[in-house]
Length: 216
Length: 117
Image (cartoon, rainbow over all chains, first blue to last red; front, side):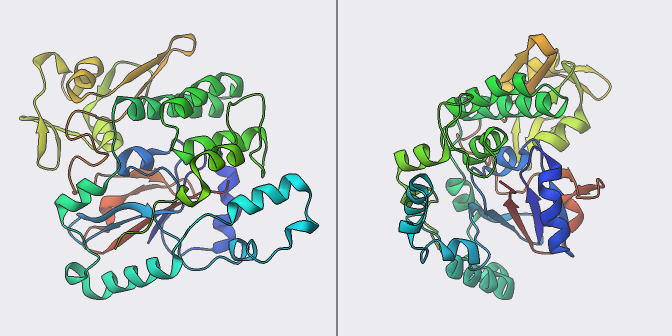
């Protein structure tokens, strides 16, 4: 197991890593390099790599078991919440995940390796990796420029690059959410800095499409 | 890939982009794209615009800050992965120590991305 925190600000990831006290490599990816190299656009996402260094499943939703926080979304009485929080929660409830299925698939591969029905052929791995054209590739460059400018102390100069990354690759949620978080921490609501926000952008695509279905 | 110069060390380029420069060209495992003579500027250094042009990598310049960023390749197959062979991944761990994905060759790896946000 190798975990990668997609966080422009490494200090934001650190408390979670220290709290988990992992015994596996726990990396911090400020520039979202794994988006580029493996075709990730959201978290959690996982890639399986065999003993020979060959990818047997490309980037896909990788929920590592049931999450108490997201499970609680389904039972909270939204009438007790402020309206703006309630509308976000109602939308979030539509997000589809399959943590039980993912973990079962992973256990099968760990046990059976190449003979696992979930280990894909090299051609299928490439075919299932995300489509990438010049727009998505240019978005990656803009995101990294923004990360560099933010990290070197010029946050205002980062915003135009992150806006451009969002425009060019509107389905890359890691580019959007990491940028939104700086303007409205914890809520990622509408601000003057960006045209979108979590609630509006998710509602536009339909929350049920926030993660693609897990395809065995 | 962030750049402060348009000459780049071929090893640094490989670690960051997944593309290794070999005699036959820029290669991601067995997928190779020939490079023009202008791509080589010296012993082990590359001319970024020449390589970028051949691999379909967008090169974005922030003139005010004197930096460029090179996006990933687009010429091979229109997919994020040119091949199923995993690229090298070089990132710091939470203590700031360099980690290389290739150090785990010989074991199964599940690479999981997450975020604080």
